Structure formats: structure tokens, C-alpha cells
Amino acid sequence: MYSKNVIQSWIAQGLVTVNGQPVLKAGTGVDPASSRIDLLADPPRYVCRAGLKLEAALDHFSLDPKGWTTLDAGLSTGGFTDCLLQRGARRVVGVDVGYGQVAERVRQHPAVTVMERTNVRHLRRAALPGVIKVLDMVMDVLKPGGHLIVLIKPQFEAGKAQASRPGQFLTPTGCGMLMSDVATGGLVRDPAVHADVIRRVQEACMARGLVPQGHMPSPIKGANAGNTEFLAHFVFQATGAGVEEELEDGEPDEPAKS
Image (tube, one colour):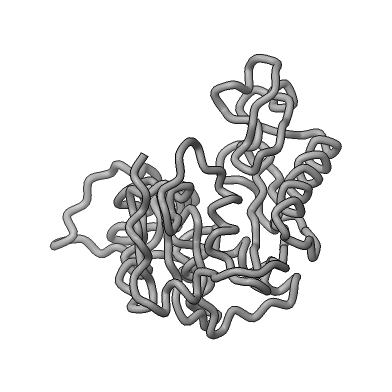
């Protein structure tokens, strides 16, 4: 029901006991038929920590997704989707290039459409040549007046593989960033780099008709290196059909093949 990282965190903290004894190693063998397994903590509200990030953004920007038709681009375990469902979203389409990561509670929810093994850049009504940036895809399905909440991860704006050598890397949002800004282990410490990444994301969004409504630091840091992350809110002010109109006609179109 919960993500692998959440369960491993419980075990590492000694919050999981077998027959009254704490188990501190995730690979410990247990016979479920003859063992009593207890969790010495209240289960989290969401299937993974990502739900807490979106929860904070919805509260901070005073957004109520009740009745919304939404797109979770980068579904993963389903933390954002779980939060949207608990806040009353009418429907969520979750897209992820991976497979088998979605928590069963999210996967089985009748309001959720899961699209695995699907690159979100290809989720368009028609096939387009070349590489499609994520923001361009969003603009193709977001309806006028629609809301976009972006989770900005500065460490990923530079790209892990290139972080060890200087140069410039084109990010999924079309923003450039010096790879030398990322320290060993993928940690971005410099507040000036944080500000620059946010500015570039905002500029890329504004160029596509997205109007910034504000941004905030995530209430929890990244899971591994402990990076500071940010959530930004935009509203689309343009004309054209959006994801809600598309979904009224049925399931999303089959993703374009590259």
C-alpha cells in the first residue's frame, strides 16, 4: 500500500516489530503465517512523501482541486495523485515512463487512469517529430484557466550524469544550468542557484502562456541527498482545448510512438 522508501524508513527507525522485537534490516526473512508484525506509528496520510509536498502547495496557494480533472506527469508511487484524490479530484490521469511503481491503493481507485511505460513528452493528440519538451506537452492538454503546479528539483535541472563536468545542459523545461553548480552526490547548496533555477523555470512557463502565481520551498527535502525543492503555481491564460475536454470524449489518445 505504501512506497518502498516509506517502508524502509519505518524499518530503519525501528518502528516495525516482529513478535515484539524491532527489525532493523529490510531484508530480514519473516514467516507471515506464524509471526506477528506490528507498526509502531500511525500510517502516513499518503502512499509516499510526495503527497505532503502537493498538500503544502495546495494549502499555500489556496487551491481546491475538488471536481477537477487532473494530470499527474511523473506518477511514480502516486503521492501527488493520492493527495488529489483525498482533496476531491474528479479524475486523475497518471503518466510514468516506469512500470510497477504505483501503489495499489492508487492504481485500483476508480477515478484514476494509470498510463505506465509512457513518456509524458509523447502524450499528445497527434504525433510530432523530434523531442517534445514536457512543458510543450502540458500546453497541449491544459485548458484555458487551468492550474499547473510544478515540483522544481534543482538537482535534476542539471542532470546527474553530467554533474561532474562543467558545461551547459538543456533541461526538460528548456532552461539552461551549469552542471558545475551541482556538488558531488547531486546536492545543490547555493541559494543563488536555487533562485536562478526558479527564474528560468518561470521564464520558460511564461513564454508558453503560463502566468506565475507564486512559489514556495517544499516542506520536506529530497529523499536521498536532502536537496531543497520548490513548488511553483501557474495559471494558463490562452485559448484552446484542454485535458478536461479531451477526457469527456473517453480515454486519452494512445501516446505517440517515436
